[in-house]
Image (cartoon, rainbow over all chains, first blue to last red; front, top):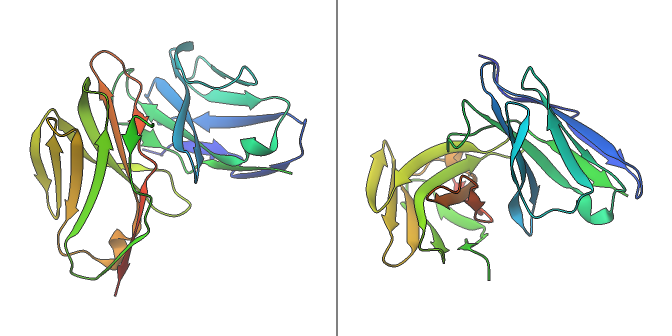
Length: 113
Length: 111
């Protein structure tokens, strides 16, 4: 089975712009979670989607949003980018919600200038 | 104070040594404990999964949970240079599915 794929792998944006990141989960997986990873804060949970519904949301401002499509693919959007949004954004898929066996993609490295 | 504390390291040890990685936590409701390994430029991958207290062994890896002390450990025996990576602990409690993560410890195994 192919693993979790994320596109793009690298992205450079400037402050004030918006960005959309994409995640394709493992075939058959219905749950997709998004995380922000920075050296100082570690992995911070953004949100989780299951069957196109947001099931859980972390403590991030409304500039961070996401959605899941009927084929389980997911996108996350960050509007009005700030310098502090520079991070590795990781997507993880699970066969069902609530499972702890999360399979991570390689991440999208976002740099905000 | 963070719910899960983990020393970011780096921790550098010679090849063949026994490695001990640790996390402490404050939420007594945590029942499910995991260790993930993350190589550079890759996403984390699940190494060990433990429920409640006790030990779990898988090859050279042993996960240990002490709920009374709110302390979990990952031991690596006969460490290899290929074990060099960042090790993250993660945990959750009861019906809350959201995982709480440690900051990760960078481990370097010197040949």
